[in-house]
Image (cartoon, rainbow, N blue to C red; front, side, top):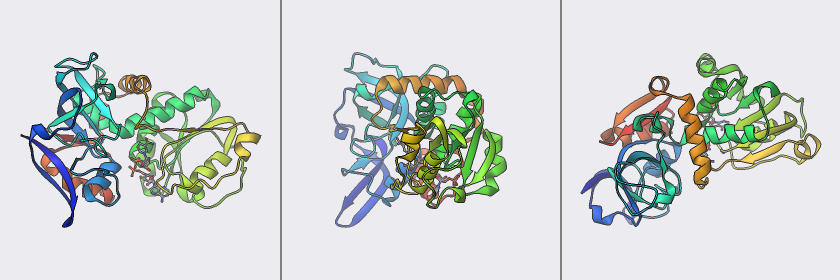
Length: 326
Ligand code: NDP
């Protein structure tokens, strides 16, 4: 038996509890992992509270990411004792996830944890930090360098946004934050923002082309914000879009793309090929260490994960939450 956050849906409704599960019920996979840490992402909050149909199969073990140690492996790349990380691949949605003492997954989904990051560090970074790095690497591939000019980060107080600010600053970029919480401006400057703008400047319908302001942007907001951001990108610049905090719509025109050569990169962390994951995690390991991550992370015991997920959706949590599974 092992402990897991199990989600069920039947005639009596949606239930989520920390409970004992029989190891024989684990889904098919060629690697068995002892999970050491998981984390709480927005998606986990939705799954645990049942506020959105994130979970596609029942019963489901929650947790879209984890770090842990391989116990058994039939996969050629992994052996017992290996330290591994998993992000995405539908884990916690269609395949049993990481908020559990055991996970059985496809070896093709795993990457080896960089040696300089502890298991706790990896989940302090979590899917938010990994997605932020994928976004930064996308604008780098577009040729945007620190000399190109300022880079705007929207949803700056969020998990992805705050990691994007930290990464950009460490790489020498002038990062600007867009936020709805202007009272957090000093905090945003402390973690890497050169300056802060009110997200209200971007959230309403705007003109298709506006004054060229940013060399690039990292957007976790979507909707009018993304459209206005694209309209403000300098000639030849790039936008990495990964989120929909404002909305799924994208009410833009082709003007920024055909008149200013702007590139819009879509970033999907879930199905990202392994080589790109490894690059992102290697780059994260160069930037973050135990000390820098400890400042932004609260480590909670497994027993507190469900109440903390409710707090997360209620906007009561600032910074990262790493869930210590054992
Ligand atoms: P968080 O909830 O931590 O942060 C989202 C931030 O967006 C908020 O902190 C807020 O920032 C801003 N925001 C919220 N509502 C609005 C609104 N109505 N209008 C404008 N801004 C708003 O989420 P994450 O950072 O974890 O994720 C951000 C987005 O990225 C989500 O949509 C998530 O689903 C997506 N995502 C996508 C991934 C992918 O693979 N593509 C992976 C991970 C996340 P502030 O207070 O500063 O304004």
